[in-house]
Amino acid sequence: MVLILSRSDLERVLDMGEVIHALEDAFKEKADGKAIMPVRSSVSTPSGTWFGVMPAFLGELNSFTTKIVSVQPKNFDRKLPTILASIALNDAESGELVALLEGSYITAMRTGALGGVAAKYLSRKDASSAGIFGAGVQARTQLVALKHVRNITRVLVYDPFVERAKDFSKEMSDKLGLKVDVSSSPSELLDESDIIVTVSTSKEPLFNGQDLKPGTHINAFGNFKPTERELDSETIRRSRVVVDDREAAFAEAGDLSFPINEGVITKDHIAADLGEVITGSKQARSSQEEITLFKSVGLGIQDCAASTLAYKKAVEMGVGTKVSL
Ligand SMILES: NC(=O)c1ccc[n+]([C@@H]2O[C@H](COP(=O)([O-])OP(=O)(O)OC[C@H]3O[C@@H](n4cnc5c(N)ncnc54)[C@H](O)[C@@H]3O)[C@@H](O)[C@H]2O)c1
Image (cartoon, rainbow, N blue to C red):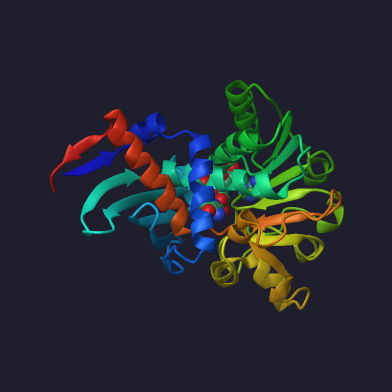
């Protein structure tokens, strides 16, 4: 029998604090060299839909997952999410398919949770303000996760579609009991934020890296194509840069390939990957003044860890629909 987990099932079983822990464990396993995960394969269609196929194995969980994910920014006009996904979970021993999960919710939870893990290790412990570029789906879970790891009391959000920023401000103020305001400009957001999250669909740099305050931490999640970027070269040059995975980041992150191609940095500028920071083999932040930056392109082990957690909890709680295929 295969367990089908819908979005509402996943909303019942997944808790952000638990997903943060699951991802921390997955990145430790990656650092220990035990996770198996190729760089994803992708197809871009003539209409601009990007499809990625992301397999991953985590031995500690004995799980293998494959996510099929699409990104289509024009979906907003169709009243559909930009990112749509589905995930298959297989027993890694027998190969048997054990669950099919709605993947957009898992994606938002595992992406937000990774922002939480990165901020826990890299941001200043006294960070209390967050500034978010992009008021979409991922921005919401990024903020929920940040609140789990730092005492965030003030939030600014910037989006050129002001109505989206206003909706975000109202929804997240009500949900988290936080002061969430719409920012009038990128430079105001930079001035007033200890932690900056870039999670937009922009293809151009969102701000000028010269304007960054010392001590800022940046969680850069938005861009995943080598020909587009959210961050300018100055931001990367000024920052201690940690990535989710070197191979994937060099293959996919325009935020890194532009400054490398311009000769502003070399690949050695990347200080660590996140697993190395979590296990302590590489240093996280070295001073209160240092600017730190975590660049994520998104990895299959995140989906594997979050999906396995969801599956185990669903079985415990009797949630989901069993079908025989
Ligand atoms: N790293 C990862 O693992 C990961 C996972 C999921 C999504 N993403 C990426 O995160 C980004 C956001 O995804 P989403 O699902 O929230 O999309 P979304 O469409 O729900 O939201 C994106 C928002 O960005 C806004 N935006 C566009 N240009 C902007 C600019 N210049 N300044 C500020 N905001 C701007 C849009 O108006 C929109 O509100 C996408 O690029 C997506 O590919 C990364």
